[in-house]
Amino acid sequence: MKVYNFSAGPSVLPEAVLKRAQDELLNYNSTGMSIVEMSHRTKAFDEVIQRTESLLRELMQIPDDYYVLFLQGGASTQFDAIPLNLLKTGKADYVVTGNFASKAAQAASRYGDIKIAASSKQDNYTYIPDLTGDIFRPDADYIHITSNNTIFGSRITKDKIPTTVAPLVCDCSSHILGEEIEVSKYGMLYAGAQKNIAPAGLTIVIIKKDMTTYPMDICPIMLKYSTHAENGSMYNTPPCFPIYMAMLNLEWLKEFGGIKAMEQQNIYKASLLYDYIDSTDFYKNNIKPEDRSIMNVPFVTGSAELDAQFVKEAGANGFVSIKGHRVVGGMRASIYNGMPVEGVKALVEFMKDFEMRNK
Ligand SMILES: *Cc1c(COP(=O)(O)O)cnc(C)c1O
Image (cartoon, rainbow, N blue to C red; front, side):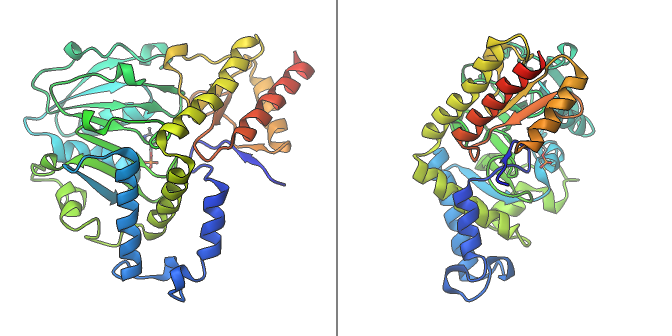
């Protein structure tokens, strides 16, 4: 049975991308072998990593004074790498808007004086706090934000991204390529690939070149941005297959019309869900409307039994991995770039039908 996959990550990829990977799997670009068997030092793979970087630069309009690094260890490894590379005087400010944001701050607090400049934890992360520049210390080495909160389903909209003196560092794991991001506003952006770029195993770091020159003495060689920048992300074996998959996905996105066109479609997909949820008392989304994510849409019925019933019946009808994260409960529909509009429409129809039968 064909299913619609609403997993938060690893998550749905465009069917055309998977098809192309399948077609090319046994014989990549007439080399007579698979991309997964190939040395990363071959000309064929070098072309893959170069093309992936140039497509990402083109689609995200990444300025020349930024490196694009292809790393491993997930976004979570960056939670340590960031303070180890970017603490200069030892002070950094964090905005805590969800679980991952909190983990990032916790990791950093082992290396320096970390201030939580703003948090919505006391209200269960149901909104984004005001992020005016004056809440941050003027002498902080960097400010860390998480622009889309995967578990709670909130995001920092473009108009709320703070203007700060210190460089802004942003975990954009769950909406990179899903909406436009003005790279030049940031010192560093990073994302685990398994939400909206590629299979698990690749982490992308986009960092201003002048921010890679002052790692702490204790920073492990493998975590230094300079190590990977100086070696074109090939200091050691890079995650070749996820990089190749990222290339296919970026080509697909370019053909689609780029990030702006994709953002329009994502806004539309999210509105199909939110408009319906808001139109009925049966389902509820607890995030302040202007802070809602367009990638992760959590909802509850208000009854744990009904939620469990929903998840079970949804699965049986081909809407899979829609159970909410264990810290939130209920349901969560993750509707990344690879989720077609029809998938969201079909889910809304299923939700209506479930409501009719259970209200
Ligand atoms: C999934 C996710 C992470 C964790 O990513 P890993 O690759 O599992 O380390 C961190 N931040 C955000 C916003 C995420 O969505």
